[in-house]
Image 1 (cartoon, rainbow, N blue to C red):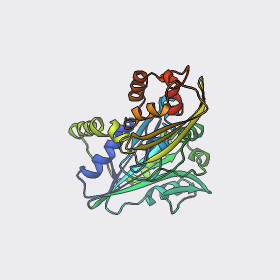
Image 2: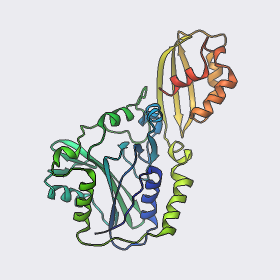
Image 3: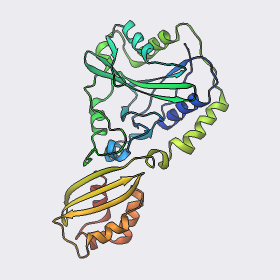
Image 4: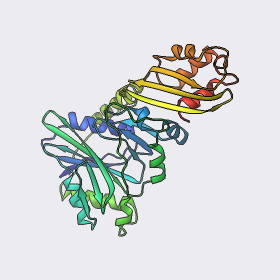
Length: 318
């Protein structure tokens, strides 16, 4: 199978590369490429970012958030995870499974778009159809930081009542445990590249196409509207101790905005918190936007001795 080369580790660019190759790259034959992302969480097309991802943890650790063009659940990527993409007519992840088996890994496909080894998940993949073509892309966890993976996808206060697709937590494993003959992911990637290509050559891409992918990344895949604004409905509950007392916040989110917000608890304040809630309803669920609204309203009038940053930390589950 012929292949493209994509050395980028930028998650928004790489999501753009996938869409561009599916919809615009001229090839009548099936092709593939292997690629990686810097630390990032990639959510499915139908998911709610706020219900699926620990956004406070991502912000604190410099982990990017991106949304892909396919469905399925949220996944964590880092530079010790190898991604594969196959595009064409009637494509399947089976070549990847056969390649792993040829390297001595007892890999098998499961019914829920996963690849398992000895009962542990090492890969998840997703599919999208566009006209007469399909894309399948997925992960191959080689030596992923599993603690970071768990923390990034552990959402504080989520009821997991989001409309759309909720991520399924599975027992996961790294392929490094099953491939002692490889000293690094670079070595494994080279071996998989050779097996999947089976002697066929690289496809051209060119600067014009690279620039088109970059434009798509800037205009779509890295924007708030795409990453957060696509989010379906979800309900979140946050609670914590603030200087005013115990506060519980109930959030109703839709398309990245606060459809509703309600405060409860044993806190003290000069003015009813419901008045503040009415001022926040309808705003983007974005830290900078809410910070401005809270500072203008005067948070300490509703929550004694409490500042905007303290209430923001509670709202965003920091």
